Amino acid sequence: MATDLSALLQGGVIIPLQDVPSRKQAIHVLCEALSETTGIGPRVIEDAVMERERLGSTGVGEGVAIPHARLPGLEKPVGGFMRLLHGVEFESIDERPCDLIFMLLAPDGSGADHLRALAQVSRVFRQGPVRDALRKARTEEDVRAVICKESVSG
Image: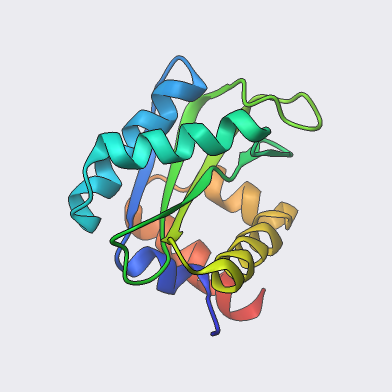
């Protein structure tokens, strides 16, 4: 299955700029938004994501976090992107606060697809120019243009 970020965001959400005080609040905002698009309760999503966070940080460095979980009831992987006004502590490997958050939700039995989607998200966000462009993006359309462009060429 060829998963790119534009496909993940078709049924997902983009929040171009949000001001939250903590990792828990950032996750909460994305879970609420993804609940609306997936039809899965926000508490169900948040519990699954926080359970994964307890296993180890999803802060991957350079101000990027990729919280993720597998959930029953999803048909296909779906993503949500949010840029934060001020970075929050995600216990990243480089100890930097995270301001670019991409949440990935995948169907419960989708081990390989989930891993491929995580790898694609990681590849896109590992690119410095992508991170820079996302930090300059002001609207959902701006974000989508960066992610769709980079998904095709990334």
